Amino acid sequence: MFLLFAACSALNSASDEPNPAVDSGAADTASADTDTEPRADPFAAQPDTAEGLTNISADLAALMEGGTLDGACDAWEADPQNRQKKLRCGKWMFFYEGFDTLGPPAELYDFYAQNFPDTMGVGFSGYGLVPDPYSQTGRNLGMGKGAPMGDVEAVAFTCASCHFGQLPDGRYAVGAPNLDYDYGRHNLAMGILAQAAVPGWDAGNHNAEAIALIQPELDALANDWWRQMDFLLVLVGMANIETDMEMTMSHAAEGNYADWKTGTMDFLIEPLPLDDGVHTVHKILPLWGIPTEEEAAAHGMPGAMLSWTGGGTDLYQFLEGFILIGGGTLDDWPRERLAPLVEYIHSLQPPDNLSPPDATLAAAGEDLFHAEGCIDCHDGPRGSSRAVFSFEEVGTDGALQYFADPDQDGVPCCGLDEMAATELTHGVKAPRIAGGFWMERLLHNGAVESLEALLCLDGERTAGLPEPFSDAGHRYGCDLSSADREALVAFLRSI
Image 1: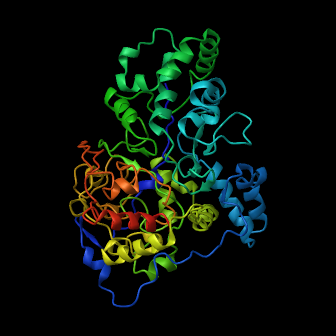
Image 2: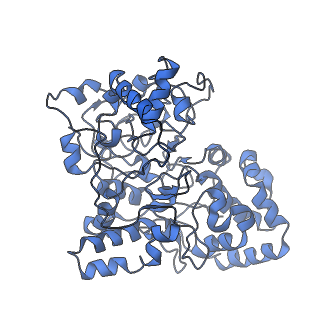
Image 3: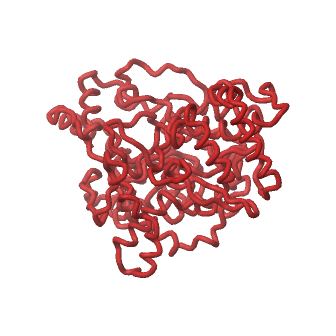
């Protein structure tokens, strides 16, 4: 009946102003290098502007400021000149503000959280989410208030659902792309289980891959009669809710949800609020180290170049895209309401590697990074690009060029009327790489599993998967000696 409708990864691909390095989808890579003035160091230390807030810690309670964030925005509004209070408000918004976007009934979401811990994990940790230590209903961090369904309370994604997670070394990091999050399975379980609780349900009416993926949850429901009865009571209580959301999806869409790796998703797909009719896969991006307006200017960038398409000029437009794609109302969110969250996200820094590689090897890798031309694409703040590149040039999976414009006519599709046609880039940026020492799921679609695989140290990438899952392209460095490639890996794990 219901999916976990949301715009979680609108933060990954919402487009904005056109990038001057792109003309009709083809990158002019020389345009980023026409300046003759010395450019700022891409990997210069980022100033600490966090005002003492804890954003990276192995202690989840400490990271959540000991549960004291409730009321933070009221405190800031009463003292609007206090920057620390403003950042605390922004941090509360990061974890708990749903922007009144579309999502499932709160009672249904909480029923899952409380009745399927054996398969879904406590606080949906079985899907890679982080349980909220202060939730009274067993929710995960990253759920906030959604648009009400008539008189029925709903929940919706917040920034933290996709951009907060636990690093392999045990630390939690605000802004970390949650590459453990099984978004596809989460949505399938939420939607299909609600149907399975209704008498007469037939698994044969659903995609076989989707059913196989959530079979443990289906078995848990089928083997517990009391849970079935409780579930039916919840569903009966919601029989007359008012919603504009679609309740089901096609076999093909269910199959797409089942095919995504953790940490990846398509968010313009049925039955979400907007559907561009194209299957694209986006890896969740980090939200730390985003260039400020001053940094972008110092590096000769047209803006912060947010999202995989590189079209997001600044965080305000970035968040407006999240609200728009999630079915929210932009008029309800003027920039002064978004300002605390914007300033808080700008304060986030990438984590340091607690087990850094050999310094001599990393230094050799840094020399190679410059000498072999890696810096030519990763010369912006924290190693981001200063230009958008064509998929033909990079050689990576090209499905993303059709995002929001399947006809390639330069006109945004499918209800994205508030997105100007000039916002489409049809290209791909090079992402910020600082703090990525721990990451898997490389490239924009997450098709490559490690830095070693990216540099062909594990052998040639020959998976041969079709779009949008292809691991082809970005073979830069693969022709170097093994020793040089190992040095490059060491450098990348040192920044």
